[in-house]
Length: 337
Ligand SMILES: [Zn+2]
Image (cartoon, rainbow, N blue to C red; front, side):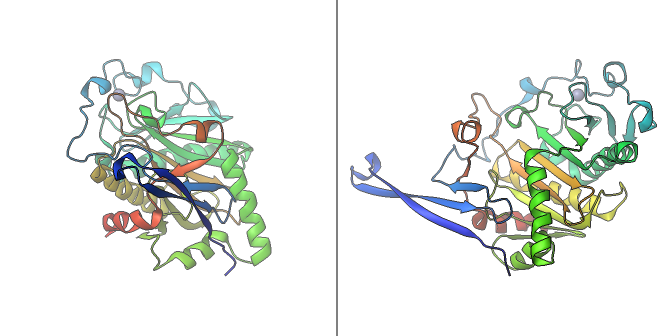
């Protein structure tokens, strides 16, 4: 099997005030992602541990939705309508409503308001609403693909301000163009190289290697889930489908992704977390690229919360975490049973 899990450990020594100024050694583990070559450091506790029994009161930050652009009483007055090629002014599926993003990050860029309620905590979004949201986003992404054959697409989520969200109403955002994001394009390139070199798809080989190991989480029908060897961030969980190209909105893998995301969010809520990011990626023209999703927890939203992106990430493009995937994979797995 050609996949290499590279790691090494440094020790940082100092005289600790908590050990009567005796010398202590803390470990910093360096890991490299076998596909992308990007590194992560696993360091001693990097941020306060959330307390599941002391949840912050978010009522003031969330508000009543009276002025919210994504609430049903406002959405048709204040959100844009699609260009003609999409075939509808706005999309709809279950509670979900989709429309163009007023502030696009990509040639094609939309928003899916997920819920009729102004707010639901992440563990109350539920697999059915997430599946409707993904389906609604996929209807748009398919229309874009039919219109201009965009090579890349993704369906993404920010949830509450520490994750980068400016609107608390639960929503998804789809983007599509020929560039892909930096990481998405790198992954697609490396998947193509891997398949050319080894005659197999990278994630097929990775899943075969990880099944039954201490980073394997479980499956939700057509989608399998792992805690990656070199996580991008805290409590990172990845789901991979045995599918390339785009997903049909009614494909069983959509339910598989929605159920798995809901399971991970359930785990996060149990830990006392309340914010996250999601990215589900598609490289349409690359038969080596399997459809995959990344789910990451972000800093707990509370008064004076501490952002988990600091000089490491913003200046040095260096990821770091403090809980190893081998530690949390079995805890996530308990939510997949
Ligand atoms: Zn709202």
